[in-house]
Length: 571
Image 1 (tube, rainbow, N blue to C red):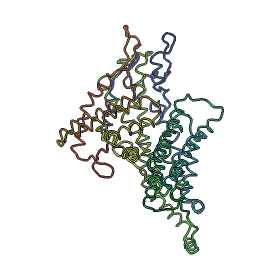
Image 2 (cartoon, one colour):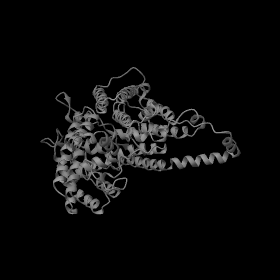
Image 3 (cartoon, rainbow, N blue to C red):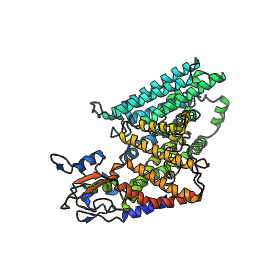
Image 4 (cartoon, helix red, strand yellow):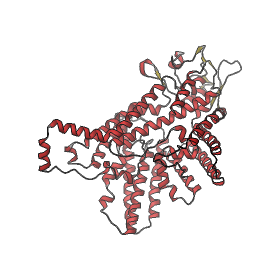
């Protein structure tokens, strides 16, 4: 993947394009007005905004920001930049608070690890979301009340299946309400922004409680369904445990609010989180006189060295992973101001106020910039999920790895992409949805419908879900009717499947399919429309690449999951 990344960089740097008579150079950032003149409203046609200005506004075109050493930084991947500059520092700080608070005797003798988790996590949530987090707290409280009610009903011998439907119905209503609030026009408030949206953020929309609600509701469902299943099994086996141990409110809120995983996962199931040190209910007792005498005999320096070495030993694995993620973040920030500037090639080359030759991407450029975009999106997700996992690991919580394999290996097919990307979501779907379906097709349909619904009331997600359903079902039928053993046949099928997987991912990204047509005089670009040309050219150029990539992976025989077993699609 590293070699592919370097080759793609060389291809991008070798592109020749003339803008207003000056050769475009991303390295020198010339012509200067292409990088400095970033107005969205570039013209009026018949008394209204031009097609380009309307599209640029909807596509989220923003002013190029000031980067390092006087360079311009491309803000196309706005969410990544907001996370890197506004939320990552707070996540690092809150994790350090957790790590040190758990090792201060004055704190550990008075509060349990679960209580410490809640305290530090509340500080992070309020710092990031302010009082707008009230909606998240209300949703979690409603889920807790419903869970207690259905568990009491199961203990009174009510059917567990009906109680499970009550839990699902409640959370689906909460998701629908969140989706409705999400599409409402944003209203300004007279209250201070730091109070409403949190003091550590500069913008209110990115990573707002409405946007990050999907991770909260997955935890709500995991808690309720795990506890319901435990209560049901204990009733059948006539085993009983104290209610406070089985349905601890402290453990529930620690799970809901756990700082490293709160905003963007990975989605750790409750049965796993409850066994972690962060959810422990035990309070450390005051040391006995004998232990106190032994500690007093030691020098202060030896105690400090011992505690520091023990702390480093416990956080070293997560710390090493975090350093790798931070290095990747720095590399992505460098890329956004040197060779990877999608605002220029996906939007600004269509600006009718500039004379660009050629005005659209040409031939292999569709493949290069399409793959660069997909790889950046993957790395964007990889560092966000990976840094959260590393921070949790520093706190002793082993969260699942959402991106265990590379972008090129995880996209061998649509089914492979579902198995190897967002692995924690895959495990959630498998345990709580797919396993209760009455058939394979029904299970896939329910999973895709829920996945689309949880992303909001946006048409592109439902279209994406439908296309994925068609692709996955087609793959299932093809592999079910043919016992494929030949490596050559597998390579050919993987080539077409990977190309289809890449095309489906690019279909959501509408600016990739934009083309501009010059007028009769060739002076301005007045015809601005969508076309399937980009996807077709990308697919044709990608076939050869996917052929070599599939052969490399299939022939090597190293297509394994993170636990060392052969990767088998669960669909």
